[in-house]
Amino acid sequence: MKKSIKLLLFFAVIANSGCSVLYDINQDRVGAYCDSLLSETDRYSCKQRNRTSYEDYERDRQKVKNGSVQK
Image (spheres, rainbow, N blue to C red):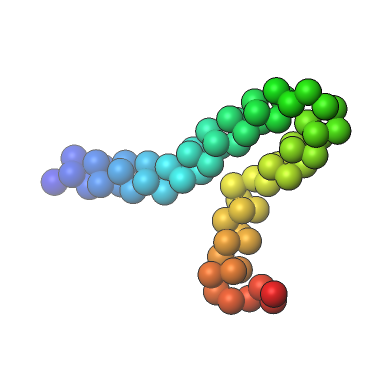
């Protein structure tokens, strides 16, 4: 019984952190793309557009989802 509770807790933690891991992987890929741009101005603009942390992204997403962002 205790083993199944530990296993359930383990999967809950993995599922909860999975989104942030995927977001970070994608941010790394976008960063590599930005680095590949030839123009310094383009590289800087690309990095500025894509520097949002997962926590900031999730907070903004929740605001939109709850309707607390005005258009």
